[in-house]
Image (cartoon, rainbow, N blue to C red; front, side):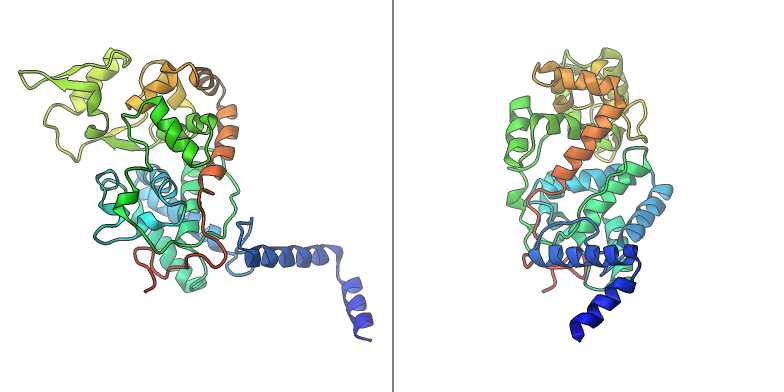
Length: 334
């Protein structure tokens, strides 16, 4: 009798409703198995992506530097101990204590989204997922491709300054240095060139490219990197003279700094890559052709970005019973 009742019930449901039930069951199974999945929060917090994108859009409308900051933030999180929001933890000896992370920004945006989500979906959405979604949205609202990314990351409970330096790319790195770091994260040479395109938005402090200049006996800077365009070098020296304030920043992309596009690669062809780690992409024969391809075909860059960003935001994720869902992104639950 019970079986007949179940059969009758499902036979009377519209086919679409039946499919939705099956989808819901599959989402629950994915969550239970401890893996990332698309629409992970479909049942527990269906408004999560709407809340995150609106928070990012609102913050960016009043501060156009926000998208670049969020994109940089997710790189610094995922490359150190995986995408577990460990970079958001505050305190002595945490990842934020490293000099390379002192200039990170965008924390207030993540915290703002988290506060809203704690109201609508308490103790449900991880800070790690919020950060990954916010970086995704930062690209989309500045003209880049919209990407569907899986969710279900959990937050780490550890953040150590000692883990930062061995795991991040410095702007003075050689190609071999960068390949070593990227390879250790499961990222390919193509991913390296593609993800370097993040420099099409955002800004950098003068110290990030000071190795391309040298101060003479008169206190004036002179160009010592022959691969850098001389007119662009003069612009940089005028914006960042010797003894410039540490707070001064320069756009990564001198042409379209607020748009996520393929101008970064066009800049490389014109020898206007801001960092040494940018210029080597054109200098090295292993990556030169991909730089040219992306400079000539934005669609190809966008398609490659979709794939590489998915890989980036899946590095070392914690799922299932690992980690926790923090109530506040800046501190562990206790």
